Amino acid sequence: MKEIAVIGHRANSSRILRFYRAVKTGIIEIDVRRINQEIKVIHGPNDIKRATPIGEAFSRIDYFFFYRDPLLPPMALKKYLQRLDGFSGVMIDIAGEIDAEELLNQIPDNKHISYYFSSTNHRILKELKKIRSHIFTSATLQEKLIDPATEVRLCKADAATVKHTALDRGLLEDLHKDGIKVIVWTVNDQDEAAHLAEMGVDGIITDRPDKIRKKLLYEGYYITNYLDMH
Image (cartoon, rainbow, N blue to C red):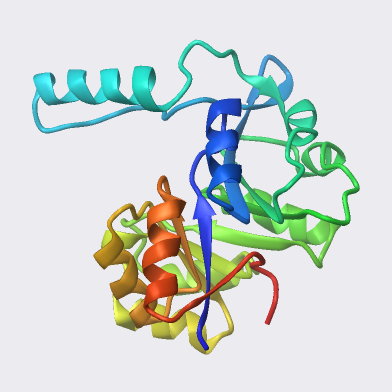
């Protein structure tokens, strides 16, 4: 039976954590950035782009007032991680410049939760691996990269995080050939998730883990709560 991970996207508020717990999401993803000399969990995206100004306005209203928690200030990472009992894994997506050793010092010693690190900043992934070679890292790939597979190999990442619309079978096979896992984001459509699972991706990041889990279980997949199991 094929294994696949379903990861709850941007679990950056208590409200979303409650939802992800209720639908039995094993792995969640959070976004962190250095703010005022402290590593903090950030709420919401840096930008929202739509085809028209009206479309962008409605997207912001929907995102900030009905889906995320816009009025919450960023919370210190160390404090936020204390809230995560009940989850099996946390993917920490790193934005901007953060000191690798300082980041690792924020991670609690919790044998029940596995911590994974992803970023478009591949330099910090290499630094994390130098400090703790056993940790699981995922290189987030930009669509503009000429040779994304080589980029992942150079930073010694265990996985590649790829926008689902940018993934093709050639890239997937190239990464899998070197034992590199492939995680796609952000997939909320059940049929698209099933298609990506059939292609062979190892993980799907989604805002709707309830819907995606249901579809993949129906299709005969085993939902794993770990990214670093072989």
